Amino acid sequence: MTIRRLKTYAGSQGYVYQYYFVGKRPTPTGDAIEYIFDVTSDRKTKYAVSIFLPQPVVAAWNHNHGRSLTDAEQYAAVKIRLFRAFDEIEDLQITGRSLPIDSQHLEGSLASLGVE
Image (cartoon, rainbow, N blue to C red; front, side):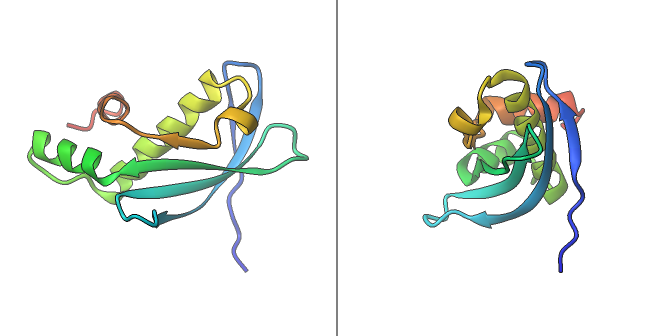
């Protein structure tokens, strides 16, 4: 039995989200890693939100910075993308279930954490 740590995030849209990390897996095409979170904003309805971190985006970051991102740094960028979705998407359950990370998101997320 897996015990998951339920976390809370108060979004700027006025919703208080509860979420936990379910896991990660490569996409069927192998060109990205899918990070899966279970999310609720009403404590009744739970739904999955997938954040996709494309391998070409990671490879470009690695090339531009002269080193490889660690797993922890990748996960941190993914969580920041999730938090931005909580803040920016009005109805996450309908329009925010599948969120990509592009080069701009990755650079901005890691820069905000001081990762060079």
